[in-house]
Length: 136
Image (cartoon, rainbow, N blue to C red; front, side, top):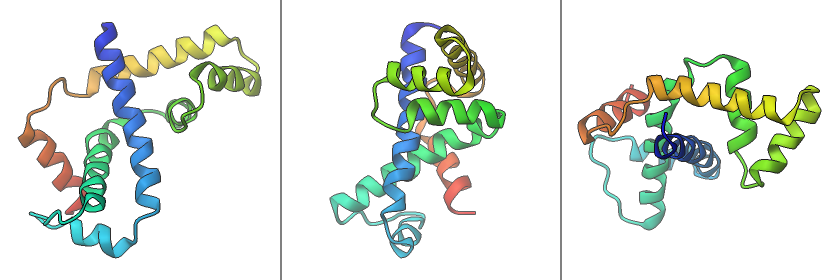
């Protein structure tokens, strides 16, 4: 996996966790309204909500293929804006492992995601993932 692809996957995972944080603050009725086949994006808030829903739909099916430990590691590393080094140090202390081990585990999980996440998905593929996640 090259550096560009690694950054691309990290950004997708980061957006996924930020999207869940954003949706937690949105009323369920508003999310339900935006699940329609062609939502009318009247406001910036609606557009941000749909973008968050798309971020979740594009990553969630592939995260489900990871073990609970692997998902927990990603959540701890990418769910906050805290410095990556600080998060890795905290994980290493909590688990009683070296910092290098944390980075090796992160690399292994990102490789698993690299194998399953499509590279450069088309708009149609993204729409299908959105429909599968939010319209079923």
